[in-house]
Length: 497
Image (cartoon, rainbow, N blue to C red; front, top):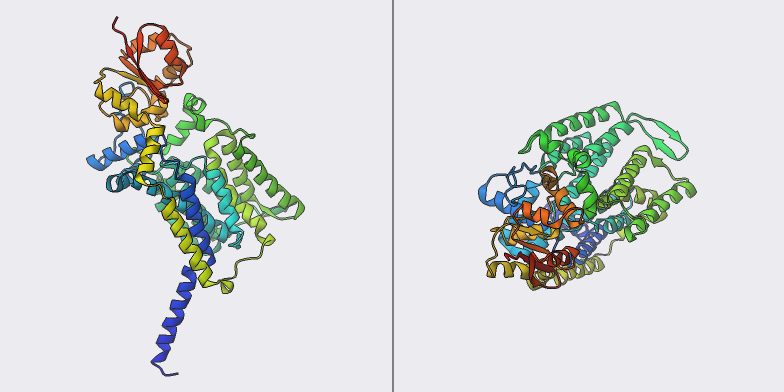
């Protein structure tokens, strides 16, 4: 072989290797996870909280400043708020600004696809079996359906997966990986309050790093002193990085404040309610836990101390709050697939078949393109899930004065009818701080005279859910007149007579 042909041979070999990696079995799985993400959320565009996140992002985008006081309501107007999601809100509005509703759906599909792929990579690296890792991604998918919507929490959960990846790589490859954590937390604190879960994770790993024992199937291996020292130092710098935010200490302690000082919010909002074990997701949770227990008991598999602690943390969070099932899935999937790793033959790159893989990836891309909802479908979802027609009525009939609105309508009203400050919306924390949430809950539950709250705030018209019994109660008082009603909403105006 001539000297000139050697570089050509090397280049050809590199190109062939790169092509095989590009169309490998794990990439096929990743493309299938993208399909799963798109098909699972194509009909879940209209989350009530999406709208006020969109308005907050618009304010930040246009003013180049971060609000720290409420300006959307007349009941909690100018009350201090913690802008703990401002960076995610800016990203949400940015895609809307350039691409409209299709951009928002793209944001949702991309965020969820990234979560599934990151979960698959984590499970593959952690278990060492890229075939079984797909089951871990499916476990994550099942529990992610509880919170798959255009909301900042999706980005927070993606960062939670990144943290688990960083910790795993820092332990198994190089401690230098740990030093990505400060950057991660500096971003996370401005994305979502789930950064606090990241701090809890570091505490779990740090605590387990000191122990070296085996008790039955439970094992723990003490970390090398240098590894633990690097991890502790990176954790301390990460805690310091949390103060890179627009609201200082208040933003750092916000998750603690939410859990300890907002009982009405936690008791009244559905997603914060305890998990019902008889629900579909509750049954799946029990099945996953049972599978883990059986693998440990019957296969005499080892379970590591930090895994046991993470499972306990995930179960505690999910049992207490339905929305935390997402976190349970993230923490459980890697443990589940590691225990299953020897039950299925591993992926062999040499056995990859290029043409079938290319066909599968192309089919997945085509399915994503076909399955992605068009603008007309997105507008239809908005009209079926938001009081669009009622807002049109209010604007066309020039209703004025203070408005009392249904809690779930508040977010959309902030976006679609900014000229009318809302009574309440999905930012439950500021209304609890202002004392409005308890007033509203008592009013809706008929624990107080319905007229008292309306008179206190000089309410001139109400926009309520059409199925709310408060619509019937108010019309029976003869002080309120029903002027509009459809299958979703009802408008009542104060009768001057």
